[in-house]
Length: 279
Image 1: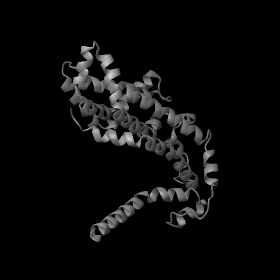
Image 2: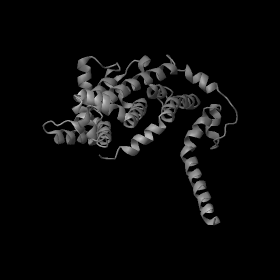
Image 3: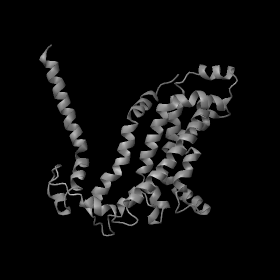
Image 4: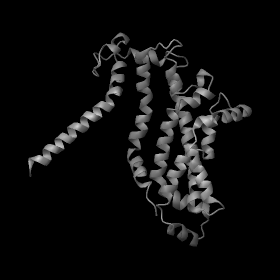
């Protein structure tokens, strides 16, 4: 075997390793900053900690009552509610667009896709007025209930594309056996949507978990704060921060996202890879 292809492969892997290191550098530097005294954080660009100081974690965990653990629980509750809402509502809406015939279906589908291009800030004031009239402000309802109304057009489109890759012959065979739309959806289609549902769940969890604007607008009680708002508490009104504690809690806040991604990584890749297929 010629050594030239082998040498090129080595160079390619070395280049990819450097790119990976460049992408991971901010995260590794933040990890180092969480393990050193605050006066040493900005003293060196190194990503290697000088010691295993965990004081920042202990101090940051209880720095802002009711404690960072409460913020983590709040974020997981809101994210879980959003995931359930999107899985239920977006799947039903996608099935309707992909399999049912109703008047102006293509028009409604185009209008639904048009909402993807509509900035969220354009509907912010009307939504806030509605939720205020309903008495939902300072609760989690504005962050969860809209998910049960199929408001995320991106996931509806993703599921519609996946449904188009499922042969209609399966629906016809189920109809011959006497199944209606609900039984076809629940017993035939839904079991085949695993990869697409996993993709929807992962992205919904991550986007909701990392959302800052929504909780900032609708949550006023510190006991109900989510992780992004909890991290904001480490910065005072003068723009000064407790960087050691901030970095420590930022590292902890990333753990649920990493756990979800690693656990569902294979299904996420399958869902993205097969979404563009059409039957």
